[in-house]
Length: 293
Image (tube, rainbow, N blue to C red; front, side, top):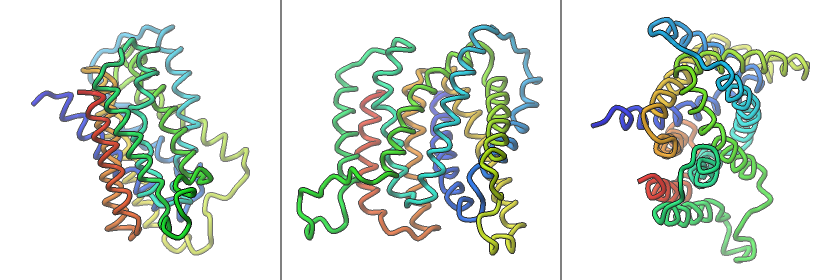
Protein backbone atom coordinates (compact mmCIF):
# COMPACT_ATOMS: atom_id res chain seq x y z
CA UNK A 1 0.00 0.00 0.00
CA UNK A 2 1.48 3.34 -1.06
CA UNK A 3 2.19 6.13 1.42
CA UNK A 4 0.08 8.71 -0.42
CA UNK A 5 -2.98 6.44 -0.16
CA UNK A 6 -2.58 5.99 3.62
CA UNK A 7 -2.08 9.71 4.13
CA UNK A 8 -5.11 10.53 1.97
CA UNK A 9 -7.38 8.21 3.97
CA UNK A 10 -6.11 9.75 7.21
CA UNK A 11 -6.76 13.20 5.75
CA UNK A 12 -10.41 12.33 5.16
CA UNK A 13 -10.80 10.86 8.63
CA UNK A 14 -9.30 13.89 10.36
CA UNK A 15 -11.45 16.19 8.23
CA UNK A 16 -14.64 14.46 9.35
CA UNK A 17 -13.65 14.64 13.03
CA UNK A 18 -12.65 18.30 12.67
CA UNK A 19 -16.06 19.18 11.22
CA UNK A 20 -17.96 17.72 14.17
CA UNK A 21 -15.63 19.39 16.68
CA UNK A 22 -16.29 22.72 14.96
CA UNK A 23 -20.01 22.09 15.34
CA UNK A 24 -19.63 21.38 19.07
CA UNK A 25 -17.43 24.42 19.72
CA UNK A 26 -19.71 26.76 17.75
CA UNK A 27 -22.37 26.24 20.43
CA UNK A 28 -20.18 27.82 23.10
CA UNK A 29 -17.69 30.15 21.44
CA UNK A 30 -17.76 32.96 18.90
CA UNK A 31 -16.52 32.01 15.42
CA UNK A 32 -13.26 33.94 15.28
CA UNK A 33 -12.33 32.68 18.76
CA UNK A 34 -12.56 29.06 17.59
CA UNK A 35 -10.67 29.68 14.36
CA UNK A 36 -7.94 31.68 16.08
CA UNK A 37 -7.04 28.91 18.49
CA UNK A 38 -7.51 26.16 15.91
CA UNK A 39 -4.87 27.71 13.67
CA UNK A 40 -2.63 28.74 16.58
CA UNK A 41 -2.37 25.26 18.07
CA UNK A 42 -2.00 23.60 14.66
CA UNK A 43 0.67 26.11 13.60
CA UNK A 44 2.67 25.66 16.80
CA UNK A 45 2.55 21.87 16.43
CA UNK A 46 3.71 22.04 12.81
CA UNK A 47 6.46 24.61 13.39
CA UNK A 48 9.10 22.27 14.95
CA UNK A 49 8.81 19.95 11.93
CA UNK A 50 10.44 22.64 9.79
CA UNK A 51 13.75 22.06 11.57
CA UNK A 52 13.66 18.29 11.17
CA UNK A 53 14.62 18.49 7.49
CA UNK A 54 16.38 21.23 5.46
CA UNK A 55 13.96 23.42 3.50
CA UNK A 56 14.94 25.27 0.33
CA UNK A 57 12.37 27.93 -0.48
CA UNK A 58 11.68 29.40 -3.92
CA UNK A 59 10.68 32.68 -2.34
CA UNK A 60 8.84 34.44 -5.17
CA UNK A 61 6.74 31.42 -6.14
CA UNK A 62 6.06 30.54 -2.51
CA UNK A 63 4.90 34.05 -1.58
CA UNK A 64 2.54 34.22 -4.55
CA UNK A 65 0.90 30.87 -3.73
CA UNK A 66 0.96 31.62 0.01
CA UNK A 67 -0.84 34.97 -0.43
CA UNK A 68 -3.57 33.49 -2.62
CA UNK A 69 -4.08 30.61 -0.21
CA UNK A 70 -4.25 32.93 2.81
CA UNK A 71 -7.00 35.09 1.35
CA UNK A 72 -9.09 32.20 0.02
CA UNK A 73 -8.76 30.05 3.14
CA UNK A 74 -9.80 33.00 5.32
CA UNK A 75 -13.06 33.28 3.40
CA UNK A 76 -13.62 29.51 3.22
CA UNK A 77 -13.13 28.83 6.93
CA UNK A 78 -15.40 31.70 7.90
CA UNK A 79 -18.18 30.37 5.67
CA UNK A 80 -17.62 26.81 6.87
CA UNK A 81 -17.96 27.65 10.55
CA UNK A 82 -20.92 29.93 9.92
CA UNK A 83 -22.75 27.21 8.01
CA UNK A 84 -22.23 24.37 10.47
CA UNK A 85 -23.13 26.66 13.37
CA UNK A 86 -26.64 27.19 12.00
CA UNK A 87 -27.39 24.02 10.01
CA UNK A 88 -27.11 20.26 10.73
CA UNK A 89 -23.65 18.86 9.97
CA UNK A 90 -25.18 15.87 8.18
CA UNK A 91 -26.92 18.22 5.70
CA UNK A 92 -24.32 20.87 4.92
CA UNK A 93 -21.04 18.92 5.17
CA UNK A 94 -21.74 16.48 2.29
CA UNK A 95 -21.72 19.45 -0.08
CA UNK A 96 -18.00 19.81 0.53
CA UNK A 97 -17.81 16.62 -1.53
CA UNK A 98 -18.47 18.82 -4.56
CA UNK A 99 -14.84 19.98 -4.49
CA UNK A 100 -13.70 17.23 -6.94
CA UNK A 101 -16.34 18.49 -9.38
CA UNK A 102 -14.83 21.97 -9.32
CA UNK A 103 -11.32 20.50 -9.39
CA UNK A 104 -11.94 19.16 -12.89
CA UNK A 105 -11.85 22.79 -13.98
CA UNK A 106 -9.50 24.48 -11.50
CA UNK A 107 -6.84 21.76 -11.48
CA UNK A 108 -6.74 21.86 -15.28
CA UNK A 109 -6.35 25.63 -15.34
CA UNK A 110 -3.75 25.76 -12.56
CA UNK A 111 -1.91 22.43 -12.76
CA UNK A 112 -2.83 21.11 -16.21
CA UNK A 113 -4.90 18.09 -15.08
CA UNK A 114 -7.01 17.03 -18.07
CA UNK A 115 -10.68 16.03 -17.99
CA UNK A 116 -11.25 12.34 -18.82
CA UNK A 117 -14.34 10.18 -19.44
CA UNK A 118 -14.05 8.86 -15.92
CA UNK A 119 -14.25 12.38 -14.55
CA UNK A 120 -17.37 13.07 -16.61
CA UNK A 121 -19.03 9.99 -15.08
CA UNK A 122 -17.92 11.22 -11.68
CA UNK A 123 -19.56 14.58 -12.28
CA UNK A 124 -22.89 12.86 -13.00
CA UNK A 125 -22.73 10.89 -9.74
CA UNK A 126 -21.81 14.01 -7.77
CA UNK A 127 -24.68 16.02 -9.22
CA UNK A 128 -27.11 13.19 -8.39
CA UNK A 129 -25.77 13.04 -4.86
CA UNK A 130 -26.26 16.77 -4.40
CA UNK A 131 -29.77 16.43 -5.80
CA UNK A 132 -30.73 13.81 -3.22
CA UNK A 133 -29.26 15.87 -0.40
CA UNK A 134 -31.63 18.73 -1.28
CA UNK A 135 -34.79 16.61 -1.11
CA UNK A 136 -37.14 18.26 1.43
CA UNK A 137 -38.48 16.10 4.26
CA UNK A 138 -42.11 16.87 3.32
CA UNK A 139 -41.76 16.34 -0.43
CA UNK A 140 -45.11 14.53 -0.74
CA UNK A 141 -46.92 17.44 0.90
CA UNK A 142 -45.29 20.26 -1.08
CA UNK A 143 -44.98 18.51 -4.43
CA UNK A 144 -42.10 18.21 -6.90
CA UNK A 145 -41.94 21.95 -7.59
CA UNK A 146 -40.34 22.32 -4.15
CA UNK A 147 -37.87 19.55 -4.88
CA UNK A 148 -34.75 21.72 -4.96
CA UNK A 149 -34.39 23.99 -1.95
CA UNK A 150 -32.43 26.83 -3.54
CA UNK A 151 -33.31 29.16 -0.66
CA UNK A 152 -31.19 27.21 1.85
CA UNK A 153 -28.30 29.57 2.63
CA UNK A 154 -26.27 26.86 4.36
CA UNK A 155 -26.15 24.81 1.15
CA UNK A 156 -25.00 27.74 -0.94
CA UNK A 157 -22.32 28.62 1.60
CA UNK A 158 -20.92 25.08 1.48
CA UNK A 159 -21.00 24.99 -2.33
CA UNK A 160 -18.93 28.18 -2.31
CA UNK A 161 -16.53 26.65 0.24
CA UNK A 162 -16.14 23.61 -2.02
CA UNK A 163 -15.32 25.83 -4.99
CA UNK A 164 -12.80 27.91 -3.02
CA UNK A 165 -11.06 24.78 -1.75
CA UNK A 166 -10.81 23.44 -5.28
CA UNK A 167 -8.65 26.49 -6.01
CA UNK A 168 -6.63 26.41 -2.79
CA UNK A 169 -5.88 22.69 -3.22
CA UNK A 170 -4.03 23.41 -6.46
CA UNK A 171 -2.41 26.57 -5.14
CA UNK A 172 -1.22 24.74 -2.03
CA UNK A 173 0.60 22.17 -4.15
CA UNK A 174 2.51 25.03 -5.76
CA UNK A 175 3.40 26.41 -2.32
CA UNK A 176 4.44 22.98 -1.01
CA UNK A 177 6.63 22.29 -4.04
CA UNK A 178 8.23 25.71 -3.61
CA UNK A 179 9.08 24.95 0.04
CA UNK A 180 7.97 21.87 2.03
CA UNK A 181 4.72 20.55 3.57
CA UNK A 182 5.89 21.51 7.07
CA UNK A 183 7.11 24.98 6.09
CA UNK A 184 3.95 25.94 4.24
CA UNK A 185 1.67 24.25 6.79
CA UNK A 186 3.16 26.06 9.78
CA UNK A 187 3.23 29.51 8.23
CA UNK A 188 -0.23 29.38 6.64
CA UNK A 189 -1.76 28.39 9.99
CA UNK A 190 0.11 31.06 11.94
CA UNK A 191 -0.79 33.67 9.32
CA UNK A 192 -4.46 32.72 9.63
CA UNK A 193 -4.16 33.28 13.39
CA UNK A 194 -3.20 36.89 12.70
CA UNK A 195 -6.10 37.28 10.28
CA UNK A 196 -8.69 36.08 12.77
CA UNK A 197 -7.21 38.01 15.69
CA UNK A 198 -7.63 41.17 13.64
CA UNK A 199 -11.05 40.04 12.46
CA UNK A 200 -12.19 39.39 16.03
CA UNK A 201 -11.09 42.83 17.21
CA UNK A 202 -12.72 44.49 14.24
CA UNK A 203 -16.02 42.80 15.00
CA UNK A 204 -15.63 43.85 18.65
CA UNK A 205 -17.42 40.84 20.04
CA UNK A 206 -16.99 38.77 23.17
CA UNK A 207 -15.42 35.35 22.72
CA UNK A 208 -18.17 33.54 24.62
CA UNK A 209 -21.54 33.50 22.91
CA UNK A 210 -23.72 32.96 25.97
CA UNK A 211 -23.28 33.20 29.79
CA UNK A 212 -23.93 29.49 30.45
CA UNK A 213 -20.89 28.59 28.36
CA UNK A 214 -18.70 30.06 31.12
CA UNK A 215 -19.68 27.12 33.34
CA UNK A 216 -17.90 24.64 31.08
CA UNK A 217 -14.72 26.59 30.36
CA UNK A 218 -12.48 23.64 31.21
CA UNK A 219 -14.45 21.39 28.85
CA UNK A 220 -14.26 24.03 26.16
CA UNK A 221 -10.48 24.20 26.53
CA UNK A 222 -10.22 20.44 26.02
CA UNK A 223 -12.22 20.65 22.80
CA UNK A 224 -10.10 23.57 21.55
CA UNK A 225 -6.88 21.68 22.25
CA UNK A 226 -8.29 18.57 20.58
CA UNK A 227 -9.37 20.40 17.43
CA UNK A 228 -5.94 22.03 17.21
CA UNK A 229 -4.24 18.63 17.34
CA UNK A 230 -6.66 17.15 14.80
CA UNK A 231 -6.17 20.14 12.49
CA UNK A 232 -2.37 19.83 12.64
CA UNK A 233 -2.57 16.13 11.78
CA UNK A 234 -5.03 16.88 8.97
CA UNK A 235 -2.78 19.57 7.48
CA UNK A 236 0.39 17.46 7.63
CA UNK A 237 -1.23 14.39 6.04
CA UNK A 238 -2.85 16.42 3.26
CA UNK A 239 0.22 18.50 2.38
CA UNK A 240 2.60 15.54 2.34
CA UNK A 241 0.13 13.55 0.24
CA UNK A 242 -0.31 16.26 -2.42
CA UNK A 243 3.46 16.44 -2.74
CA UNK A 244 3.54 12.69 -3.48
CA UNK A 245 0.62 12.42 -5.91
CA UNK A 246 -2.05 14.32 -7.86
CA UNK A 247 -4.11 16.89 -5.95
CA UNK A 248 -7.41 15.44 -7.21
CA UNK A 249 -6.59 12.05 -5.68
CA UNK A 250 -5.95 13.49 -2.22
CA UNK A 251 -8.95 15.82 -2.20
CA UNK A 252 -11.32 13.01 -3.23
CA UNK A 253 -10.24 11.01 -0.19
CA UNK A 254 -10.41 14.11 1.98
CA UNK A 255 -14.01 14.69 0.98
CA UNK A 256 -14.72 11.09 1.98
CA UNK A 257 -14.56 12.56 5.46
CA UNK A 258 -18.16 13.69 5.03
CA UNK A 259 -19.10 10.09 5.84
CA UNK A 260 -17.21 10.35 9.13
CA UNK A 261 -18.86 13.68 10.00
CA UNK A 262 -22.30 12.35 9.05
CA UNK A 263 -21.94 9.26 11.24
CA UNK A 264 -20.53 11.26 14.16
CA UNK A 265 -23.36 13.80 13.80
CA UNK A 266 -25.86 10.96 14.18
CA UNK A 267 -24.22 9.24 17.17
CA UNK A 268 -22.90 12.29 19.03
CA UNK A 269 -25.04 15.27 17.98
CA UNK A 270 -28.24 13.20 17.52
CA UNK A 271 -29.05 14.85 14.17
CA UNK A 272 -31.93 13.11 12.39
CA UNK A 273 -31.21 13.70 8.72
CA UNK A 274 -28.64 10.94 8.48
CA UNK A 275 -30.47 8.57 6.07
CA UNK A 276 -30.90 11.18 3.34
CA UNK A 277 -27.42 12.54 3.97
CA UNK A 278 -25.78 9.12 3.78
CA UNK A 279 -27.46 8.18 0.49
CA UNK A 280 -26.44 11.48 -1.10
CA UNK A 281 -22.95 11.25 0.35
CA UNK A 282 -22.40 7.75 -1.06
CA UNK A 283 -23.26 9.01 -4.55
CA UNK A 284 -20.96 12.01 -4.16
CA UNK A 285 -18.08 9.82 -3.01
CA UNK A 286 -18.71 7.36 -5.84
CA UNK A 287 -18.44 10.26 -8.23
CA UNK A 288 -15.24 11.42 -6.54
CA UNK A 289 -13.80 7.94 -7.06
CA UNK A 290 -14.63 8.03 -10.79
CA UNK A 291 -13.08 11.46 -11.07
CA UNK A 292 -9.76 10.46 -9.56
CA UNK A 293 -9.30 6.82 -10.58
